[in-house]
Image (cartoon, rainbow, N blue to C red; front, side):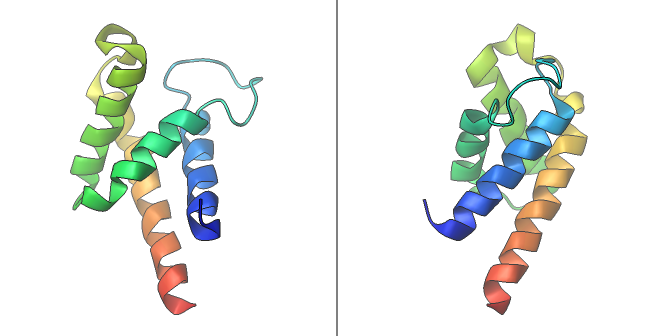
Length: 97
């Protein structure tokens, strides 16, 4: 994984851990959501809006944990907004370098 992608991956993982949609708990390892972050990162370039990103984040959690455990899409919207802003911040840094 390229250095810039690794940094973005770690940031996405930290955002997911902050929101902890599966309620794993704050005492877990910081890499608890690394696989989910990787699958979201692999699809992020196809996204054109925050709403599309929320759909993708929700789809990934349904895929990883099942529809019932993933809960409602609405709980992923703030997390997706933060991932969106982080992704764009990383892109601005990459383009400035």
